[in-house]
Length: 180
Image (cartoon, rainbow, N blue to C red):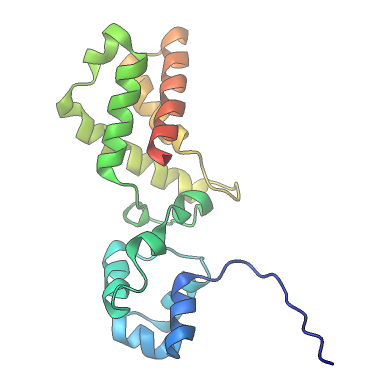
C-alpha cells in the first residue's frame, strides 16, 4: 500500500501553471516574450510584477490562457511588490470613479472643490503616491490605498482638523469603493 503525502504550498502563479500544463520551460517562454529568464522567474515567484507591455506579451504568448486579470488580479495591491510608478497597476477610471463617488457622498456643499477637470490629475496623483508608498512600505501586505488618497483630499479640503478628519473618512471610503 502506497501512502501519498500532499504538502499544501502557496498558490502557484498562473503563468507557472500554464508552463507546466503546456510543458514549456521558462527559458523558452522568456525568449518567446522577449524578456530575460531572470525577469520571468521573478514574476513567477511573485517578486516582481510585469510592466503592462510585458503582461500584454505574456497574454498574447499564452493565447489568452493567462489573462491580464489573472496576472494582476489585484495581487499587486495585496503584496506591495512594485518598485516603480509605472509598475503600479491601478485602473485610472476606477480611481476617478472612487474619488468622485466618495467626494459626492461625503463632502456636501464642498464637493464643488473637485470638478470633473480635476478628477484626472487627482487620480494620477493617487497612483504616483501609491507607487512611492510601495517603495518604502515594510508591511507584508503593502501600503493602504487610503494613504495614497489622503494627501489629495487634504490638499483639496485644507488643513483644519475638521477638514483632515473629513479627508481621512473620504480616503477610507474611496479605498473601499476602488477595491469593490
